[in-house]
Amino acid sequence: MPSHKVVLTDYHQDMIDRLVKSGRFENPNEVLYEGLRLVEQMEELDAAKLQALREAARVGFADLDEGRFTDVAADDLEEHIARLGESALETVRRTGAKGNG
Image (cartoon, rainbow, N blue to C red; front, side, top):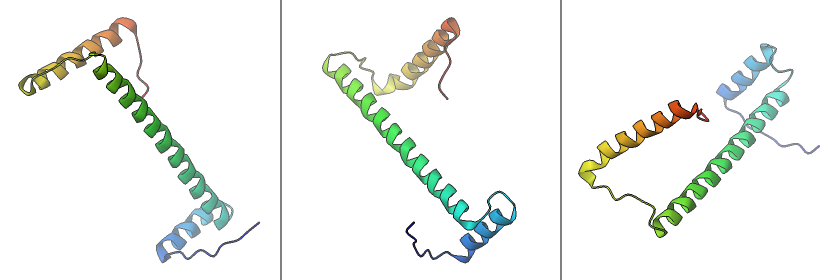
């Protein structure tokens, strides 16, 4: 297995020492592996979020191109958003739909 030299700040060295001493990890390598696993997990989540945003943009632009939109004056925007929220809430109550968050 290849090895790398890693230079840690005193803060990070103390953190690793505390985590090992707590019994949560058996050695410093386990702490670093867990940190790398979390970085990988965050990157996967960020990629999924980016893909969802791209898909939402694609759908939104397609709706614009097909004329599926409501033109709202700036002065009426707050009221329009409130009505959309009320409508969404009513739909959730009626259908029993649950959010993903």
